[in-house]
Amino acid sequence: MTRYSVQRFRAAVLHMYLRMAVIITLPLVLLNFLIIATPDKGLVLSGCAVFTFWLKWRTRRHSDDSLRYATGW
Image 1 (cartoon, rainbow, N blue to C red):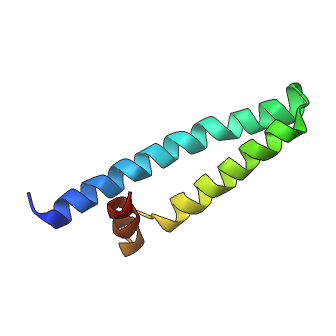
Image 2 (image 1 turned 180 degrees about the horizontal axis):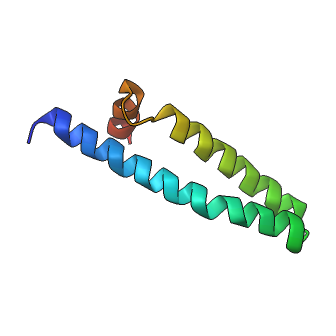
Image 3 (image 1 turned 60 degrees about the horizontal axis):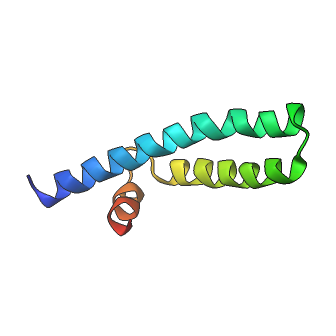
């Protein structure tokens, strides 16, 4: 395997993990704000969700940023 293909694989795995994090954090944010009524935990999870969305946006599938983020971690 070439170095570029390994980097593309790492970027795809990172993108998959970010997708799973988004799927998990959004219901938790709603759960903490609406049902449990703990806004302090909801704010922390909101910050995590915003960071995850930002990182997911920065590491789009066909961008060079995804390779840079995947190799830096």
